[in-house]
Image (tube, rainbow, N blue to C red; front, top):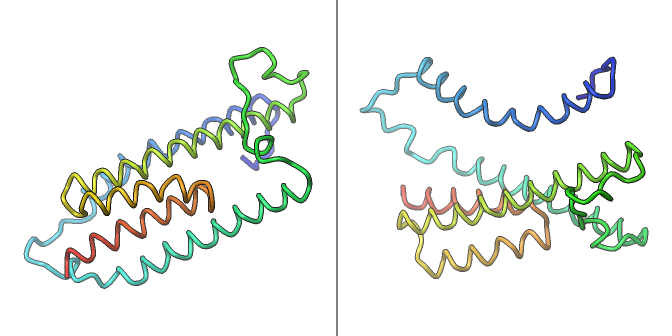
Length: 181
């Protein structure tokens, strides 16, 4: 996205195209995993939870950093007099007013707001699905799943979607590693 392009249209197409890159990652990981490694079924070394402590530290660090950044951005916006609805509110892309006077910077701003809003909603859905899946598999009780499900939107509102996502992974990996003890 940072490379120089000959036209603004090509640059915008490249920016829009990168969003579909994650769809290629899963098949590539599957293919490379099958091609490069043949695990020994008698090897129980991977199941000894030696990676849990650094993994939990990484999730906690990611949640902390993204949470602090989110809070700082919100506080900075409030200090500048920008209300939360103006900061996070998105107008409908289907209305003619969405193209604001043909100014590219305003159009890109609206695009990024919709992009962030759709990403946050998808992340909330994924986190709630993860909680449901942990309950469905019997890893947590209904009460634990309900508390975790209520924590998801609370985390979104307080520390943002990045910290919410990392927090759910931290919780999930902790539950799973406790089952392997």
